[in-house]
Image 1 (tube, one colour):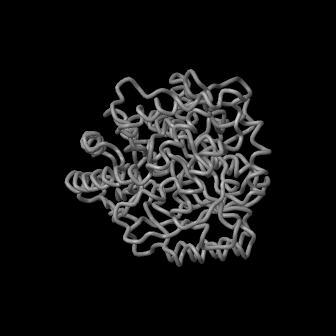
Image 2: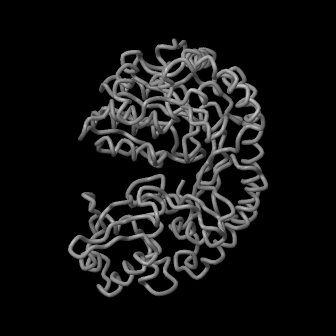
Image 3: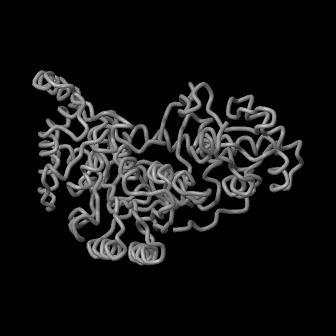
Length: 482
C-alpha cells in the first residue's frame, strides 16, 4: 500500500465547487470529480484517499454518499481498496501510467505540441546512414555525442550567448533534464520557487526530489498586472525563502504565453545571485516567436555565470517523438549531472542524436515553418472562440504553444469532463497549478493544425452548452480573472 495519504482537507481543496457542477446524484458528481483528479494527475496513482467517514464529515455529506462514490470509482478501476488499509488511487490496467484514451476520443488538445516536420522521415533515413561510424563502441552515451554538443553550443552562440561543448549535456528530452537537475540541485526540504500556473511535470519533478514549493503568480500575457509584478514577486520570494533553485519559463511561458523583457531577466538573475539560487530556465518554447517585437538573449546572459541553467529540446520544434533535449550549464555542474545519471538511465540514444545533429543547421528553416503555423493557429483559434464564446477572454499571445483562456466561471474541470463525452481531451486549468487553483482558466494549444482546432472548438461548444443547467453557469459568467 502507498505511503502517500491525501487528507480530507487536501482533497476538499482539490475538489473545488463540485456541488455547483452536480446535476444528478451527489455520489456520482463526487465520483466524477475525483475521477478527473486522478486522470488529470492532480491525485497521483498510489495515493491513499481519506477514509469514507473522514471525508463525509469534511464535506458535510452522509457516509452513504461517500461510500457510494468510492464504490463507483472502484467499479471504474480507479480505486483499489483493502479492508483496514483504505482506498488507493489507481489507473485501469496500468497503475503507473495514464490510461489509453477512450475509443470515442477524436481530438487530443491536452498536449500542446505540433505534428512532426514534413521532412522528418527523410532526415531520419539520412541519419541512419551516419550510424555505422558509431557501431564500434558500446552505444551508451551519458553526455552526448561531440557533434551534437557542438551543434547545440553553436546555436546558443548564434543567439548571442557564447557556449562551449563542455557546457552542454544531451538528455532524453526536456523533462529528463528537469528531473536530473532537480536531483542535483535540490536537497530534501529545500525550497524551490515555481511560477503559478506552470508546466505541471516540472513541479512534480521538484516535489519528487523533496522540494518545498514556493509559488509566484504569473499573469496572462495581456493582463494589466503583468511581468513587472511577477518580477517583484520573484525578488520577494528569493529574499524571503532563500530557495536552492527556481524553475522559470522566461519566454512564452506555458500556459500563459507571458515573456520577460530584458530588464526583468536582469532583475530576476540579480535577485537569484544574491541568495545563491540557481534558476532553471526552460527554453523549450523560447524561439517560437510570432510577433513579439523584440529578440532578447537567453536569460543566462543577464547574470553571473552559473546563476541560470538552460534547458532546451526539439519536442516543440521538430516533433515530440524525437526524445532529445539538453542542459546548458557550467562544466562542473555538467560533470555532477553525468555522475548521477546512471541509476535512472544509461544514456541518450545515438540514432536520435544523429538525427538532431543533421537538423540543427536547419533550425532557422524549421522555426520559419513553425512560426507560420503558430500564427495561423493562433489567429484561427481567436476567431473561433470569439464567435463561439464571446464572454470568454482569450489573450493575444505573441508566440509559444498555447493560450490561457479565462472562461469566467470556476468550471474548468467540469468542462474538461463534458468535453470528453464529445470526443475531445483538454487540460483543465487546475492541471497547471497546485491545490486545485485556476478553475476559471483553460489552456488551449495554438500549435495544432487549423482543421483540428476548428473541430475542437465545435466539440467544446457542445460540451459548454451541455453544462447549461449548472448553477455556476446559470448565475451568469463572472468577469475573467486576468
